[in-house]
Length: 445
Image 1: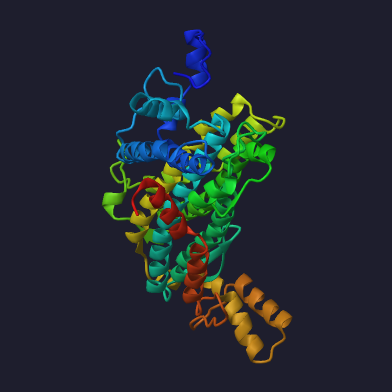
Image 2 (image 1 turned 135 degrees about the vertical axis):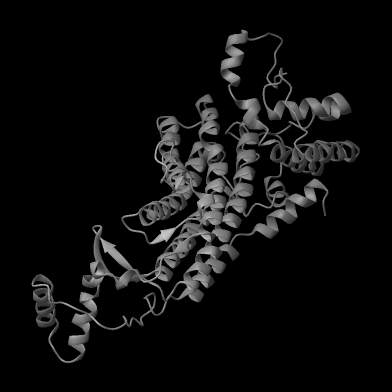
C-alpha cells in the first residue's frame, strides 16, 4: 500500500530501490508516528474535520497500536511502503472510513519530520541518563584517588604533577560541558513541524498550537518552508552535539590505552576485562577502550556525511533526505553502548600508587621548586634559571608534597561545583513535561 497510490504499480526494482531500508528503520519511528497521529486526530476533531464519535474509536485503536510498537509487536507489512502507510492501513482495515480521514491537513513530509524530532527527544533523554551514570562513576573515582599523584604531560613529555583525582575529574566535567551541546540540540528538535505539510502549509483549518501543546513541544517551526529545510539540518546539529561527547569518550579511552601499557603502567584492568593474543601468551589487551575509541571516531564523521547528503539541496523536500536515516539512526545505539561499557570498565580500573616516587618523574616537580624559591624571595626568572641548571647537571632533587589550593587544582578539585554544574544542565531538560504530555496521548495517565 502507498498513500500516494493512483492505480498503477511501480516496477519492482524501482520500488525496492526507493523504499530502501525504510521499512526496517521506520520501526524505530513507529511509537512516535502513532503518538503524532493521536495528536493530529485530536486536533482534527477540535476543528470539525473529525467527529467526536470518530475520535472515540480512532484514539483507542491508535493507543493499542502504540502498545504494540512499544512492546516490539508492531510490524510493517512487506507490501507497505513506510510507517505512515502502515498506521493508516491498520486503522482503515479495522475502522473503515474513519481511518481514511486521519491524513487531512498533513503530508508524509511533516509526518516524518515530526517522527524524527520525537525520536530525537526520546534518544537524547536516554543518552543523558547514561552520560550521567558515567559522570557519577568518574566523580567517585576522582574523590577516591584525589591524593594519588601521577605525572601530567604536555607534548607527551613529563610536565607537572597531576593526580588521578584530577584526571578522572577532568572527564567528568568535560561530559558536563557536552550536555550543554546536547541541550542545544534538544532545543532545535523541540520545535513542532507538524502542519507544515509538504513544506507549504495547508488550506485545511488546522490548529498547530494545539498539536504543539499535545506533543509537549516547547515551540513550533513557524515558517512551513523552514520546517522542511530542518530535515537533515536537525539531524546534523544533533549529530554534532553527539560528536562532542564522542570526542570526550574517545580521548578518555585513548588515555586508558596509553596508561594501561607497560611503558606507563599507571592503571590496570582486571583480567576479565581484557583479551589475549593467539601467539603471545603474555598479552592482556585493553580492547574495550580501543573499540570505544574507534566507535567514537566513527560517530565524529556522521555530521559530515549528513552534510554531504544535504548541502547542495535547494529549499523543499527531496528523496535524498531519506538516506539520512541510514546514517543518523545508528548513532544513538552506538553512543549509548559506548557510555554503558565505559561506565562498566571505568568502575573496574585499578590505580598504581607511588608512581611519582620514581626518579624518572623528578623533573615534574621543577615548577614546585621554582615556586618554593619564589616564596623565599627569589625573582621568578632567577629561580627558573637555577632549577633549569640543576636539572641539566643532574643535581636537581625535590622533597615535599605539592601544595595547590586554587579552584580546579590538585588540592581543590571542585567536584561539588562540577556536580552542581551537571545537575543544573540536566535540570534544564524538560524531560518530565514531555513524558507527561506523551503519556497522556498514549493513555498512560
